[in-house]
Length: 278
Image: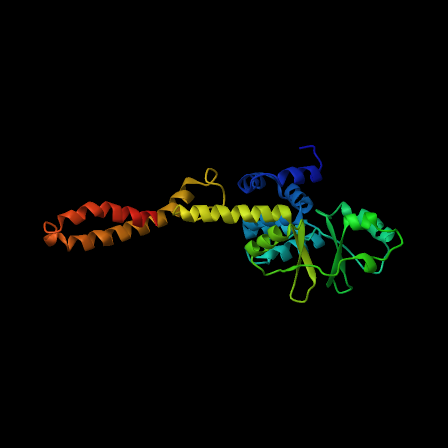
């Protein structure tokens, strides 16, 4: 309880979403608003997305204006899009400065940025012009201009791209982070490798649930309420039960001929089992 908000936010971000929701229900609004304000931008957007809209609207006035604007922007992107998993904690620089000036600016930005593997070079209207790595900055001569040493061939994704497609692209090219741009090529955020791992795990889990005849769960199986599990599984079972009745009704019409084709009844369990397996 005596830890700083920064440490509390860091620890809180590692909790499972279900546990986070339990905790926020027992924290007063003033403390909770400061905690959310200190969290990583993408983590707090994920948390607020799970909360009741009324609760979110009650918390927002307690936060700084810049943080409110950032939260509303991140919450506005459709679920499953690149915008929904990105963070706005990125480092950016103009191209018309020297390496020594760039390093000085990065020192000021670093404490408020989640990841600075790549530093993005922006034009005056925030259009993405290129990027430079920390390694390049450290090895470059102090008086070199960023415009002369930066990489201009930058790979970016659109804010409305599907998150699974983005994850596959990052895995393919082994990026640590990837920039997200709008339809005018303006940088709006970045997606980091840890968020991509979460997406791949989420997509794989959903595939396993569906393969087992169950609708995907928002939380893990053991942490989901019994009512939720019964509903997710029950819909599939009721559907299978209905098709079973249809099969039984059809077999009933063949009863008069059953004695003549009695040998075919031996194969009936195999046919039904193969249907279940498929």
